[in-house]
Image (cartoon, rainbow, N blue to C red; front, side, top):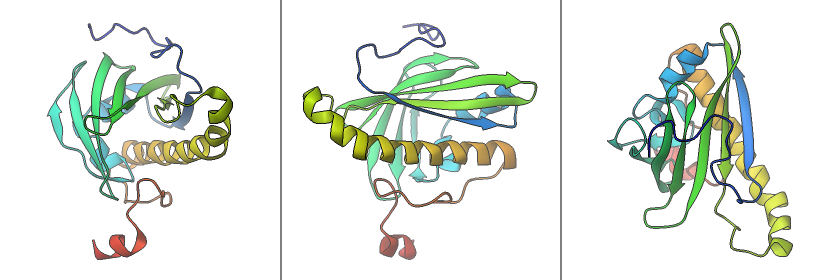
Length: 187
């Protein structure tokens, strides 16, 4: 599939219910934000819950990497679409398991200003009947994912603006991705 197979603004996973999108304005031009998100291993300096980000293949559609979280969780990231200067779409999931679709987009806001948006199409609860899944989605999944995405976006803004790695858990701990306090103290 060519790198530009998905036009900006297109829904990369039609039919998936209840995706969550969070955006953050960044006082930097879109080209500077693209340089950061398209850099191999970008999660290691920019992601507040990432311990390491080994890259298997880079760049473009077909890229593969892993994200190793502070709590020991490891997810594979497989890039489906790569749109130079705009963003990418990737599948993220446990090795050999089901994956969520994650879409990264850079939005131009004006001279020297842009926004970074992440949309997650979570695989969790998709196999559960709608009549049952709406409550856990609304009460637990959506708020936890929103908190996570806000922290990730703040980490990327930190790196773009300051030019230095974001401290781990800089924007607060997350129960799904941060190491337990006792384990974090030993690192």
